[in-house]
Length: 220
Image (cartoon, rainbow, N blue to C red; front, top):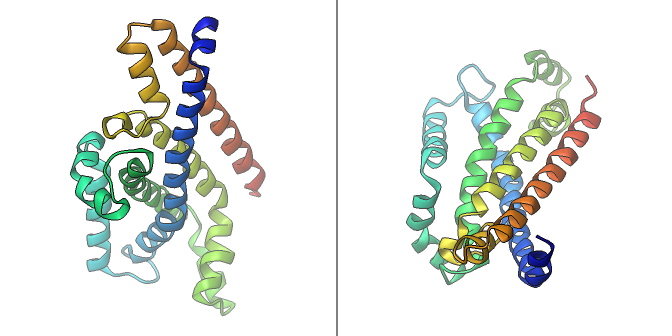
């Protein structure tokens, strides 16, 4: 394996960089769009503060359809959208479009679940103190659910890494594409093992970091 590591060192570092770009952008999309979407899903639920059955049904349907769609088929289906947004359907940047779509839907559901774990007494206490909508969300809901939100983002990030391994079909690159091109297609088992070890180490680092952060944020 050491010979393979030295032989393909440059290609591996490039693949790791491509994976970080894809996952980094999708995580950013999850936080910037998935977090508010999950919050909206929470507030629109039956029995919640801003109950809206029509909006809740629409948003839930969209999220469920995206999450249940086979990812590889979703990548192909979004090619026209990807080409419109970034000017091309091929490459690492183009691969971030379907990844971001999945990231938003995936994390929004985890956000909703985390917020549902916040005791209703917290909301009642916030409203009784005259908290504004902004204060209710950021000073009470997010603060109480911060540990679950971090754990959800950690689990989502690991899933995004898994999704990124198939982005070679649109020239997205990444560690998964490296394993296929330099390992599987060339019948070099050691190269595939090398890529798998890299992925395992990467996932373990993310899981450890996320779990540690969640534990430190959990003040219950």
